[in-house]
Length: 451
Length: 186
Image (cartoon, rainbow over all chains, first blue to last red; front, side, top):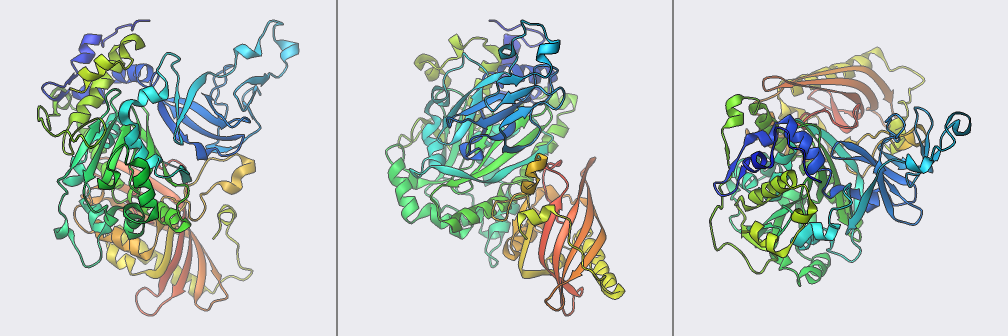
């Protein structure tokens, strides 16, 4: 297979991101044709986060969601596995399941009554005998099935049969994911349901910020949230940005993470009760023991992470996990949920859920200001000059000696755009390379990418 | 208030409250709305009891037979799930000057109607349901509309506006919130 080049040739896509000079062509956030290519080449070929296993605990439990802009159903099967299929009837294209979640024995299309079992197999076509040709085969007309793999509770799906398996795709990012997902042998579970809201901005602003931008949190973006979390007798004058930490860029795949080092964990963000649970006591000691072969977990403070392209989360008790669903170049829907150590005490689960609503949700004291910033960027990008003047991505460029060998993989200073450059480099590769023969992670390529 | 209860229509008392009580509570709501629409957030916070639960559950698209699970339950998060303390934090943030989602400030209009009052067994304590439409206009051309229903427990109080809010459950008429954030209060 090779890509059919229209306006955007491989060469012109490469010119959008200049990692040597640290420049972004703003059209990556606005161009409709680039967006259509993203649906095909990024969202059609990457592992995409759909939810958590515990969204669908019992057989027949389902959750409807999206892969790119394609609606899908994620269903727990009789054998305990999870299937994901296109939420679209192949007859006239109607959405098969129209609820957000629930439990079903079968799905029946409301248009002409084609019925599917929970595995997505077409099992009944009304008037099949009377009206359809004798060689009509129901097995040819089931909805498209996606590949499904689970990493420590998180359910990912991929349309592309050629794509590498999920573990290969996650590259060397898994130890950082484990700081949220593998603190306890019991694993994690979801609290509540998916919270959804609409932000008129490009999906990459959100994904890149969660991948590699501690800078905004340490400067101006979230000052109001700090005020909201301070004890009554303190004000913003006590706020000092923590200057110590690292960011991690995966060897392959454009995944990124940033974290503070050697800091109080921050009751401002999660409240004193959850802060304590995450920084001392038996649950913390156990997590430290489980993770210490991979990294000095006890030295990590607040952190943020993105698995390319649009799965992001915040470990350390913030524990929001979300998919930034693209809805055109100028809009996203945030679908966010909260997870917690499955064996955490009930009072921790309750408090963590409440703190999450207070901080990282549509009305959260942190998140509401992100919504403002991203919208205003997207508004400004309507202009001709706005679209033609490159944006700066030079922080940490050619700054050497910030790698911390105590942590796995390639790390740099916490205030850096190494991760942003890696994120967009991978975006360029997905957008311009048609075959997994070249895209597939190989030791030689991985080395080049992380330089 | 448990989940299934939210789905059901508010239970009406057999006997209507007095015209005077109806008038008093409606006037209380109009004044409360005016505080919100004129950025008097600290005064608005004063209307809340210290044991308030200020809660907006998430609302889902459910098929008919599962409609009793339309809302997230208590303890399962929501769009708001606040105590007096966390509301106080939110108000501190709001008036800090660095809450960019509301600085420059939004123009809001809280319209409150359909007020139905039930007297309770506790003296001077009322269960009240009302409908709202909150309009927000901000920046150059952003406009959001948040419609829904509030289920309150009000207690009569000395001074102030005559009542305090002991409990507020907000049922918003959206499953996906159709705005870039929820930096408005209800």
